[in-house]
Image 1 (cartoon, rainbow, N blue to C red):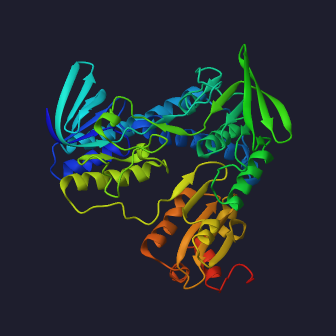
Image 2 (image 1 turned 90 degrees about the vertical axis):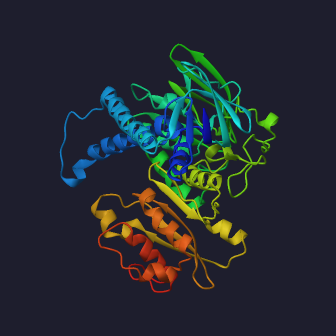
Image 3 (image 1 turned 120 degrees about the vertical axis):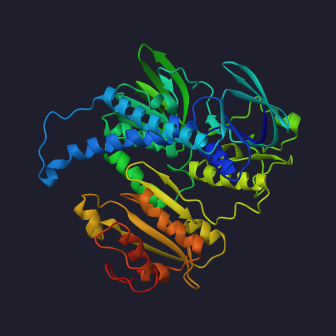
Length: 464
């Protein structure tokens, strides 16, 4: 088989790259070892958000009496919940397949091995298929990292994939790792009735995030009965029957935690086995992530890498944009990763989203920083939906008002952050956002209000 471009990995980076390459008239082959859509669609972003949606709805219904709604007999049918999750995934996988076929890309399901920069061999159920190709795009993603003594057994010690397949909420859940994935699981299962403990080795949850934002998430987790151990680590696990006894070393001494499930979420490692990177001469960093330039090209001409296999931030939307760049560069177009900002969102309770620089990073970069906040508690829409927690924080340059970043914690933070991402990408100032009329009553008004404050003329809060 001959190809102009062979994309190894059919996740949000790989399949987008393949679609764009095919659109450009390149003879395109995409190779996927498991299911189209990759980790995100099948075992990460989509299934987790599906279950988080159910848990949030369940929680809201339980609190419905404050709205005047009375319910009885409310329960969670895990089998039906998992069935619904599966249906969502299947629809999206089918959609990806239809798009690839519609653009005449060839799909191969199997394990890919790179022989040299122009040859890839794929082991499929029907045998071995060799591809002669002009360009290769590596989009193989990452896999969960494991800790010594906390290896996954699929029963007591589990990873994120197993955590999405449970047929009931564990009564006691210990989560090792307080990053984005760990906190999403903590919030989801806490809403579904689990007693949750989070162990994080760093000095705050969501390491690297704005402390003001994290403080609210931490408080909410503990306010619901959860327990958080910071600057702590698991030092021993004893399994007996259907439970685990976990020894945790904390700054205050060693504590013992009993758990039905121990979910380990401590980062991810690049998936590069069988790619023969050393033989090819593809440069990697100390952690094994592939090094590329702004055109997504590796140290070997004609070999590109996109998505999580390139390293943090490990975000599906970043991978997709990189896939477009790699496809266009393979075609010979003058494309590059020249975007200013990559927003991110964590679907914990409450939601957290960020774009651009935090206050600390802006100061570190040498800006004279203006920080402005607007509380959701002062916003009509937030109060009318019963979700007044949180705030929008806008970071701007005090000299001229250029928007440098924003952090949002509260309702629909994941949906709100895109406005700020666009503002940063367009080089907007707080004055630009403040002058933009926002519909009322809506949650995006909080961004406008924070920008008005930054511009020196707050309306719905006192000037300080």
